[in-house]
Image (cartoon, rainbow, N blue to C red; front, side):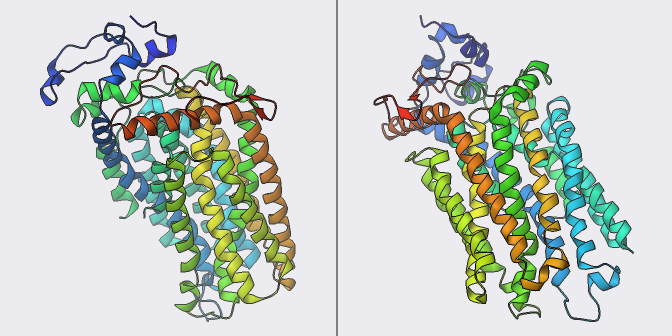
Length: 496
């Protein structure tokens, strides 16, 4: 009989071993140790069963979560786009609300200030309230505030509603990201985040859909409606040792303190703040850039926004495909992305050609959008426990929104005289600092990320043989394996 670690016992104290498929849900559960341990239980599943179970999970999550994220992004981009919809016309939003361009920049900064304040408390309530209830609350109240925008009469009411909108939305993204940890392995995060970033209902109605459709955790009562007990057990047992589990307590103080002591928390955070500062600045000013290219009227100025979005979509799809195949570690893959971002932002303040600036817009938007696909998958590999995961993601995300506060403020009228070269210079400096933080995170996570790649390749090999990888040497996070001595890798590692 195999000897189980504490993490393995925690992963599956009550396991249902079925000898028949659909009728097995009525059988009594057996202990993992009786089945020969975690690896023996996983070995009872074929690759086809694994694909079937994960397809069920994908169907429950991906389209719904994609709609959620796209609805949020539509609100963000619309606030930037509406500023130039009727530029040069007698009626436009700036004239109707008696706002200057500088005052309008605060529309977005106030929105992100609210995010910073409410992101952490919102995410810590996710487990306590259950994800489907809390996400429904977020979307319902967000939709109500959004509808109230129709009654805006002046800039102060606009500012107030943007603050309330950020308050109501806070916790939506890190909540979903935290929930993913309970359903997907770190090396599988490319797919859910790809759909999260791609999919594109009125928001109040969406809250009803989320309440009835969004799953909570693999062993939650609502999961029994579409998963057999054996499948529910499989989804948790297959996860790495640091994954949040259904039966975890909703709050663990020690996990919060451990996150605050972990330098990786701050390295990821600095990376996100700096990249967001440049990226949010570009996305906020992009509609104005395309309008200033000489296409001030509809629909031409809006059509110029399509190529950057199309390039981002294609890059995201390619990245998800590439990362799934385990060619390189996630941090290694981000290096050409960071290099591309840096070059594009430098071009913004070093060239004057309109065509060149537009090409830089297309590529800069693409690099910024695709960066967070490997970034969030990479971030998932070192998260620990339910509370630790929820707190760390929310804490990092709320501070990361500082970039969203500062970004729009870089484009003040006083810097417009030379097409905001100084503004883009600051953005470029932020991207370079973000790249430095990226390298710092890579150093701090080099062993875990190499372990993730090693196991990913072992899992790919098992899939080719029609099996599920059931080895007992899964990714170690609490006591990391040491593959590197300083910068040097220690010889060849099995499966890599």
